[in-house]
Image (cartoon, rainbow, N blue to C red; front, side, top):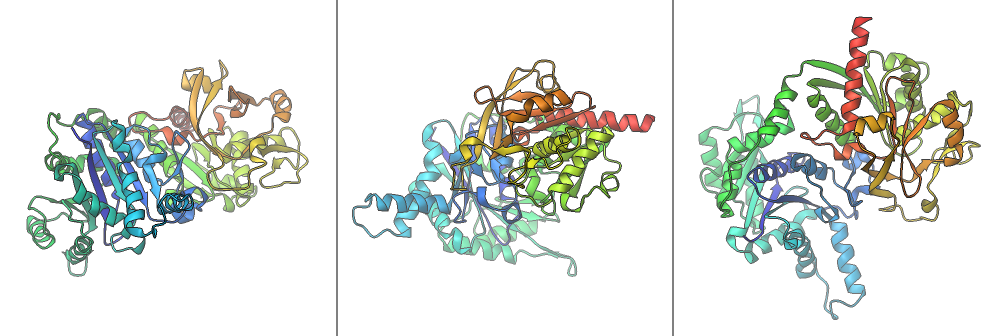
Length: 540
């Protein structure tokens, strides 16, 4: 069977959920026994989102091979349970950088380099790259942005060309659009969808299926109207109604026969009906929890829910595994101080101090760590959160009053967190951090080793600063245990305090490897500890 290609575009408005629709269809095709992956083409000029503020673009997701990518790749991995790679996220910046580099090398033999064919040829090459490996039966490609955006036009043109070049049965186009509900008129309006599809068709791309995002169910009359005016077959207009959880969307799409439409259009034979037993079990536990806990997420970007997307989802996965509803209270670290930390974190069964960069909000993170350590509240620090746990311990237990990270205080006399040696000569910011999966050796008998049940694990990183090993003996003598280190470099990966009910910090980002069917072990243990803390409070 030839590799099949499915292209997902969006119209009318952004943030309709193209990534969730793509991931849902991919999940259904995978559940039918097909080998599937998804890739995202983003129209911005940045080479990758690594240098973008989370307020600009949400979370920067990191793949196993060290790519800084769009957060949608996190959805892809969580839905499919398989790793993505550098090849799964392509930006306009990457496309132009490749073409301009080739032009400088003389690859175009004196020709005038143009958007068509040179830019579109490079886009098409990237779109087909994963398919040529022979590892996949179906490649889904999400086109970022909205049809009609100037930035997206080269990608839409590339899709048009591929629809013309590939055999008809090897290519499918899905267009996600919005059907707004006017409450005053009590009516769903199809005109924005008609205009969006017309704009797509004017670019030469004919959608095979139109997925309509809606708050209200679509009637059969409305579906027929959309099909007629948008020139698609009856039955190829489906609704994506607001769901109680993003993880419900694959089942909704199955009920709408999206996977069946894809299998028929792509002429895929010898497939099975989707096996979704474990997925449904996860949803059942998620929808019917037996208990609940309150966990504070202390961070500096909490105004934007997507800034800590993977952490939020990892808590959902761990909660479902423990049949527990996890109520996440986002706490802005800039608003936390020694004078109000008890009030801000009152009633919390667990405290998670989130990653980040820069000095803004650091005192609040340190205050939250101290509160958790002194009050015996289950604590979990990730990346910068782990580093601030080290700083707090140095100040309040070891007595190093000015202990700090040199990221925030370059002149500190106690640089307990310092720039990694290999980072000291780096001047380029983009793509130069310690990125991707590295091994972590666990110390037997520690909390970390009990959580993982292994001696060596691999977790993903995104940082420039590390624990300063010159202070290791002082910390150990005061009761902090370094339970995980990199076996090659000695880099401290995990810290914990054994005398505390649950206190752990990781230099890596465990949230990137959590999925609904395989919750990340530390998150699972953290939620268990929060449940125990909650029960103890009720009994006392």
